[in-house]
Each structure stands twice: as structure tokens, then as C-alpha cells.
Length: 305
Image: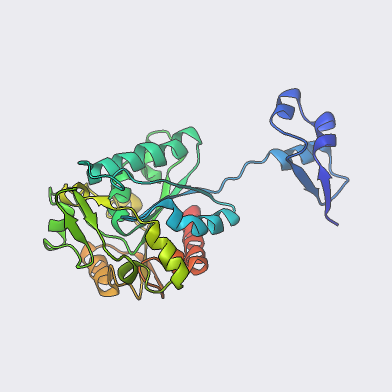
């Protein structure tokens, strides 16, 4: 029989003074399977930390963490930590580069989890963010971190309809993909921004009308410099991440078409773990439950490697 037992009685009988300070009797409740357990066993049950990794979720271009809020909620519900943040190139006409995004992801999203919280990371990127996110993982693989005497690492990378640029050759985003941006993207040279007059058709065509409208309202234009600055070298082709990179293809995508996603995968020259989802570009809004299930399944693979 499961009996909920407030931790208040446990504190006075089984924990040290220092451990008592870490717990609050009104905030923690222990579910006891057997009232005959010793206080040491009860204490171990209360104090055991989660060993699950943290998902570092990097939003796509023009999108913000709010576009991924429900997906984050689902991942949290599975017991995983989640961290997301607005990229520096979003919402500014300043000369902010893709390298600036890379450095931000590394120093403000990955390393705080790895080196301050001492937790492993699984990185999720979407669309544009596939470039800076993968580049930010240099030297953070399990092999590299172990060689440096570290106990935490980036266990894997999950790309959702993401741009796969090998980078490191001096070419910018536009040049890497043939010298032209997709037709739904407009360049505002005066404000140094890339804009999309109507994001609904390319990004949100398969969402319910109210949700699509809200998603459009939540979009923020991106610095043009991000697309005109050199792509940093990616890590998805690194030996240290072999077998640890997955790509989720969005079958009905009108922004990065399914055929283009396959061309990038084939052109990468790498073996990928691939999954398909029957949505447009914003799978996190169109089918969050299905996408969450895919992410959790991939995470389980990375965790045991």
C-alpha cells in the first residue's frame, strides 16, 4: 500500500541538522511503500538526485522560447530538465553574427548546465539554430570531456528540420545554400533585418487558426548579419558524436521542404538516426506530443551509450 507521509517527522528522526536545512516540511512529501523501512532507507529515498540529462532547446530563427513552451512542458513531465533562451541575433538589427549565437549557446546555455549544475545535456536545435548549436558543442562530447577529466557532457544532438552546414570554410549561410534565401524571407537592408511578411504559410500552415495567429504574433525578426556572416564549423560530423546525432524530418514542411532536408542529410556524408513526423516546419506546435515521444525515445538511446 502506498501511504503519503509528510517529511516533517523524518527530519527530526533521521536527518542531520545540515540535511534538515535543505528540506522544507511544507514542500516535500515522501511516498512510503513500506512503513517498516529504516530511517536511513527513507533518507536515501528523499535525498536521491535525478540523474537524467537536461534538454538544451535552441529556438529556430524568428522564433522564441514561447513557441516551444508546451513541448518543454511535456519534456519536464517526463522528468527531464529543460533550458531554452532567446538567441542574440533575434530581435535586433545590430551586427550580431551566427558566431555570436554560437558563443551564447556555449557559454550561457551548455556550460552552465555541464560545469555549474554538473548535469549531462542533450541538445535540441530547430531550423536556423542547427548551425550555431552544433558549432557550440565543440569539445563537449562524452569522449572529449572524459579526456579533460570532466564527468558531464553533451550526450547527443537532435536536429528538427534544421539547416546542416558543415561550416568553417568562410562561407555565410546564404552562400552555403546557393546564394539565395527562401522566397518567404525578405531582406530589409536599411534595418539590417530579415523579415517574413506572413509567417503563417511557411511556418504554421498546419496549426489551428487561433494558435497559428498567436504563433505569428510571437515571432521576432532576426539580424541580417546572422545570414551574412561565416558559418562556424559544425560538430555533427565529428567522430566523437558518431551515433549521437539524430535528425527529425518534417514531412509536410513548406519552409525547409522534406526533399531539401533529405538532400542535406545525403550531402553530409554521415550516418544519421532519422525520424519522420507528419507536420509542417513547426512540429513543436503542430504535434507536440508526437515530437516529445520522438525526443524521449532518442534521449534514451543517447543515455545508455
